[in-house]
Image (spheres, one colour):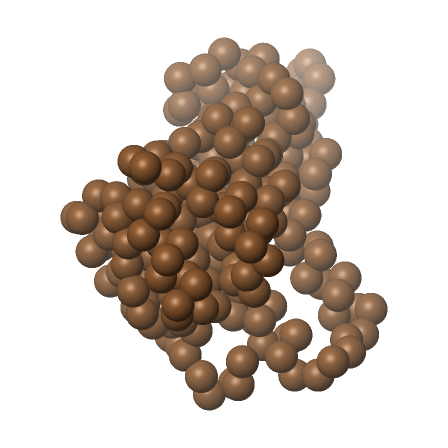
Length: 228
């Protein structure tokens, strides 16, 4: 890929309205162009073979051939194509399978444009990094791997933690100007305090959040959390 080239995208999505909206959002991101769209995996595979896009944006729930099967066949055919999944499927088994098959990112519907733009811009940086030369430096590779690890923490939390709840907790903290407590987080989201504390402590563990101690006049200090 040349730096001046558009990044070609094949959109595989069975809902015509969602297909149109996703195409508009993808093409709002600089350097991305949707060159074709398909309503199911079978049609998408045929287009991929003929047009060889840089990126396939793939739904999971589709007739004829679902997203997991389509992704598997793309990999079996050894096509030099990257995959971004956009789906309402939020179960960890599905997310794990797509990551194992090499998806670059996984976005859960409904989503905001900023989340899609973030994924596409990271992909663009990745693509151009490996287009510049046949070799790369360790520090550049480390930066790319670090980004991937951070995304996997978001998409595939450990057993006992739900991805959707983790996203809600992170979104709540991100919207606050001051560090928040487990009690405040629990009240806002509608979960138990102990549950909120588990998600907050997990975010600290994977270095997505940090703890600030609030000292009162009496009693133990309160843990408050903010994004790093």
